[in-house]
Image 1 (cartoon, rainbow, N blue to C red):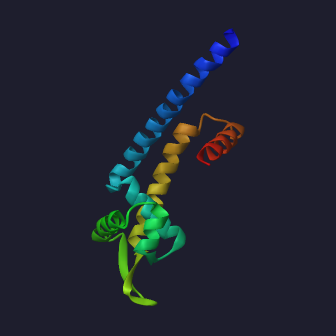
Image 2 (cartoon, rainbow, N blue to C red):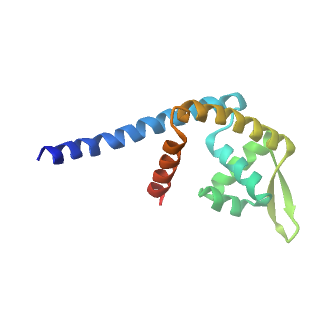
Image 3 (tube, rainbow, N blue to C red):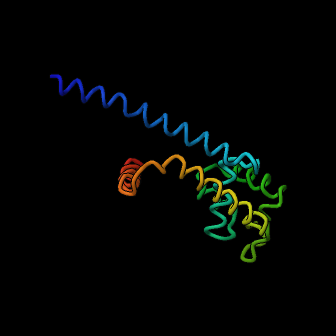
Length: 143
């Protein structure tokens, strides 16, 4: 009976620990993004465009898993800062492509460096084996 109670207590504590770390990571991410005045959603858009190249807004919307209207707002904000540009789609005159600019790529590189330093502060106390196990566990939970 004591073993069952101990397991139940561990099961109650686990979500609290998980959310505590998630809040810490979210705060660290917000702090790391502050110098560039970039939201996490805008950062995701920059990363998708960097990884996949220019794409229609509808395709970007699918990658970001947000509504097309929200994607338009994200691209508008990034375009106004010179981080993304819109181009006509050569395959469809009615469609528009979004593309990362050189300035956007530079900002993304700087953010990656800053976030990498922050991630190292958070995860640096883990051994390589612990990091691999955590990545494996989180990937399993994500499924």
